[in-house]
Length: 96
Image 1 (cartoon, rainbow, N blue to C red):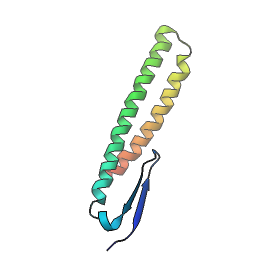
Image 2: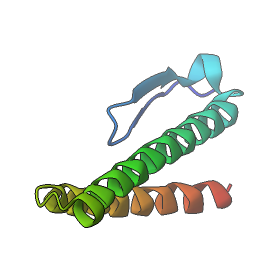
Image 3: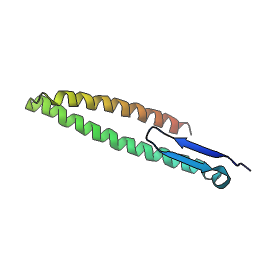
Image 4: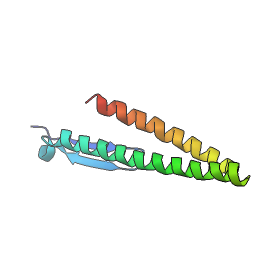
């Protein structure tokens, strides 16, 4: 009988503490659910940043708003970070 306490954490501040005596049979299911939720969240964030980039790039190129340039570049950096995170999560999920 396993009597351990496990703590899972992530960059997003999700901390989950499990007492293995009660949930040893449910651990795999719980882990898969947390991963799928984070992938969905990542997709929402990626799409939002792409929309932000499109709006700022349009303001820069079509309307000539110079202040939109730095905002568009900032959005590209955030998209890059989110895509790297998506790749990590995707690879982790494919190993299961």
